[in-house]
Image 1: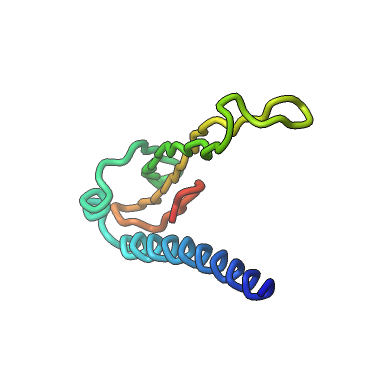
Image 2: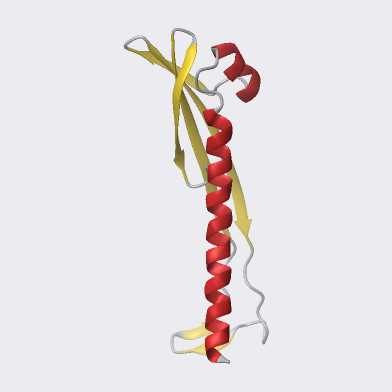
Length: 124
């Protein structure tokens, strides 16, 4: 029984990791279709860039995606003042905020999209 629960837990972890990998692969495939297209197609698909800059004849268009997710505090079952512990009364940790962001930068030369790169913790 113990091995079955370990196997199930391992399977769930692998399944969740593969879901993230599939989202990233799908996004990369969608963006890869823009390479070789005209600048006007890129702007029609992705919209107006958040920033752009030029260096050595190459224009870089940056798109930023940011989102804040709030993680609620876990529920506490017991007295409202907390549980006794080694350092006094223990209460649940407070809610927290997680910033999820992805920056996608396209390189454009001669009016044609030459490539892209992504960085951040939410690019999938």
